[in-house]
Amino acid sequence: MTINLYERRPIPGFPGYFAANDGQIWSCRTGTVPRFLKGWVDRDGYIVHHLMNDAGVRKTVFAHSMILLTFMGPRPVDKQCRHLNGKPNDNRTINLKYGTGKENAQDRILHGNYTILRGEAHPSSILCQEQVDYIRTEIVCNKTMLELSRELGVSMGCISSIIYNLNWFDPNYTPPIASNVGESHSRSLLTTNDVIQIKQRLRDGEMSSVIARDFPVGKSAISAIKTGYRWSHVQI
Image (cartoon, rainbow, N blue to C red; front, side, top):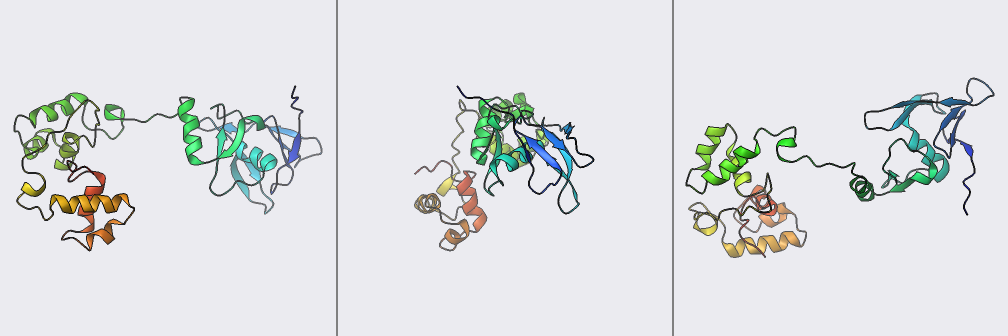
């Protein structure tokens, strides 16, 4: 059986302050008797303190950062603090660990603390789901992107990204294949074989600016192919 004994240690770089393995921060700066510091909770639920460092500068610090610094050492530059049980105010040493950004994100997903806002729920959205469905229906009925753009008050780029499922992604929606895409477009500067070569080189990690030197298009056109905004119907 493991017994977790209470332990309190000085916080490195912050003389007169102590961190305990139960997640609490203490101060002896104004006397000989340690005084518990309550701190405050920020909008994300983390406990925050004002502490004076060894240079005499008052710093705003997270309690979990001080606990890890004291008991685990300085944070590696490529690591973040993980709250293993998903509770941001639980700063016990058994609940804290250094980890990668990916591990931290996985923790938030595991504990239901990570939400991706999509569609109408996104604060920047100016369309609703009904309008998106309308766009995808009308484009099949031969209404142009310009007409839809003017009717709904959004850019043609916005209309295009919805039609080709780049924004408002729907796994059950099949984007239309227009008759004037790819080589059949009157202003196309690339062939299908060109695009296949470009996509292969992008997949191999070449930069868009380097690839553009070998084709009659600019870096932005290569980037559009990379993101799927252009030539998305060509698969490799």
